[in-house]
Length: 212
Image (tube, rainbow, N blue to C red; front, top):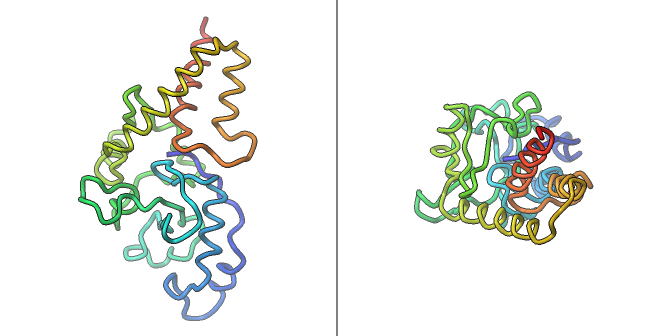
């Protein structure tokens, strides 16, 4: 899960909200919304960080606080995120992200700067994601199922491939910092899937360099 910087909402959403008797279901320009969400999330799911594209077959429009329980927030742009399909149609233990979450609540919103979710999670070498916040750690596993087997294997694979390439290059401190900027998306381009796994690893490596 990566911090998301919300940008300007689609004009069609603003206009729709100004009309009478409007709700999320009768908002006809959802393609605008998908494109906006994928763009500001730089092409990755708001929760698991898999690749998403702005079409209904590839992604879902997620309400961080659900439409059913919080209808007053159904058209609030800061409550809307782009999520992957999350194992839709598979067995419950294979489902994750919004598909698993449904109407359940989360303690932290990746799009709320005050929550700073990146500071609340850590990635282990085996691909597992954890939090030092007990409630959030429970939600990672039981609400979002972010330690589902395929997600763990994918995160581990990305980290191992990166580390192997780094070892072969025998990088300088400057090379490591350059790699961090690239994986953190400082260039403003589309992010690599599971990018924060590598970012977490590099930040720890830089912290060790500083302590020497």
